[in-house]
Image (cartoon, rainbow, N blue to C red; front, side):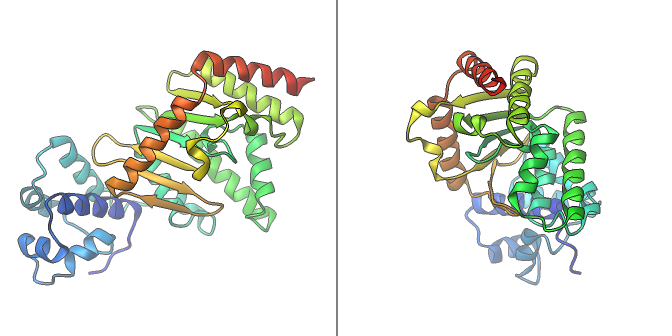
Length: 286
């Protein structure tokens, strides 16, 4: 029977597809080995439009050679919670796929690398800066939509602040973005001061500033996030105004991992980044 392709069903489908591809099997071959009469069944499972029963997972583990117990437990948890509504489903019309997938993934991620020359990661933004960005984007046409989107972001931020273990964030931020007077000079100053506080007090947050003097750099191709999980493969999320593109194939992920490493090398170290942040805050205060 067809089911709703919820984020967790799609996540499980992605993991099953990776395991199948690691074995070099087509979907038809995997369906035969799993004992399905309809060869399209594996395709539906990988797309999240057909569920997997908890009792069937042991057979999947054997056939797909899933031996790591942590990975097995992750698959079991995805099946158990496959139909469970996510909190952000209350924001219908504001949170749609693939943003819904991203919110589910980031709540399960262990660590995240972020690069965006146009905007700070939402979890690093102060409310005044966030509102200025949302209103300035022109993505939302009514005041009600703006308020609902901001409320969703606030709930997400609170959920992430309370989760255990905490998410580890590594963000490389271009100097020009820090000097952009988003929300006005006072808001921009408060935003930089917030980053200073995070850098000094939060061991789970790493902030590096990419100085203007760096010139051409690896991040000029565009914004992206690289997320890692306790089990399963890493994913890359490419941001747009109201959409997210998720990349899961190992070759693409490795390209972005290399890009992230180049950006870390090109950016200032922690001590120098903190010094530049303080300088920018002072300049914005004048």
